[in-house]
Image (tube, rainbow, N blue to C red; front, side, top):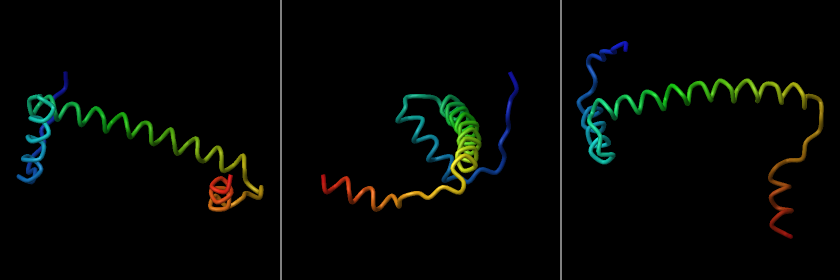
Length: 78
């Protein structure tokens, strides 16, 4: 499996990561792996989200839409 080396991390970041690792009952390495995997997955999901948002903007272009504040106010009056 490929290895990653990160140099010159702020000591505060290291302390926070160690605290997270302790709270999750993991080693620092396991915590870092979890954080990196979660962020990588999130980045993919964000790319998919943006693609879908662009598709919806194209599909709904030119239509008139009700202001969401108006819809929320109407919902509260029910």
